[in-house]
Amino acid sequence: MIVRSGLRRVPEGKTLKIDLVVDEDRIKDIVISGDFFAYPTEAIEELEDDLKGSRVDEALDIVEKYRDKIVIVGASIDEIKDLLKELIMQEPRP
Image (cartoon, rainbow, N blue to C red; front, side, top):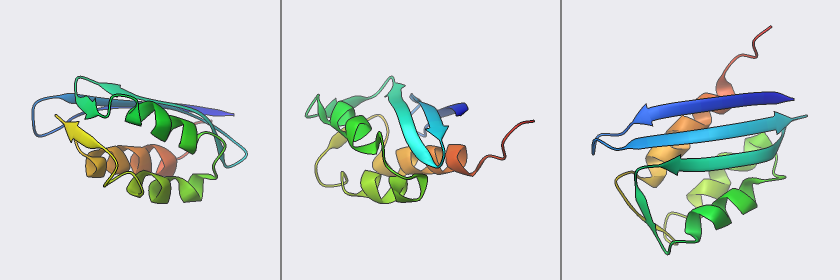
């Protein structure tokens, strides 16, 4: 099981944080948080639920499907994808 966490300042001066748990190339748990707003308010939780159980190589495509379903103020879908990709691509620590 691999646990990763990433924090990034986005251009709007806000923060974006992703906590990720991966086991055998599947996302077991993910939390997307920060000081941004998402509309509808439950959309981030729905995105997290869709990502849980998915294969790591499907994750960015799943996030992309939310591009037209969610409005994010203070961050963006692209920033979520970039940070998630960074966490997925990290080399495991010994």
